[in-house]
Length: 211
Ligand SMILES: [Fe+2]
Image (tube, rainbow, N blue to C red; front, side):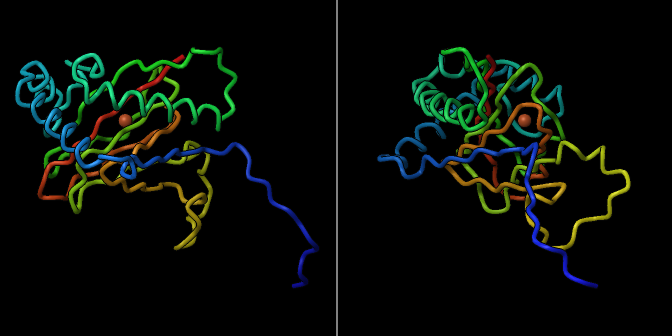
């Protein structure tokens, strides 16, 4: 077969995942310990959240149904909001959304403490623009975050991708966080937390921004 003449390929309709790392911050270890302690204290004391988690079959504790306004409740979370505000603003710039000044606002922020063997099945975050998670404790074997190609239902007759295909060609992409990582994505993007195969709990703080 003859070789084709020169060509170009243009990626279009891209899906972008934002990643930042707070671990280079001065006094990060102190900050992380404070936020870790605060998450554990909330989990111990928030009976409404414990009950909500149990009713919803969440293996561990989430404050999603009880205390989802964290920045108003503890200074460690207020500090975190300053970081997520800055990164969310940068992300919408990267995405080139034409937003009115000051429109982007944090809607909610909540704690997730996932026990070993806990998971959070495929979902989106309705009514939001940008969603994300800050990772506090990620022990060895703890779940990465798994994203699904939003065009998956259009691939009825597509062959599988080659083993080792580029990430941007994979139908599922895993993003492995470490303590201090902030991940953000557009809220319509389906994602899941696979089973936590660590022997220890995994602690994270999730949030939604709307406009
Ligand atoms: Fe989520």
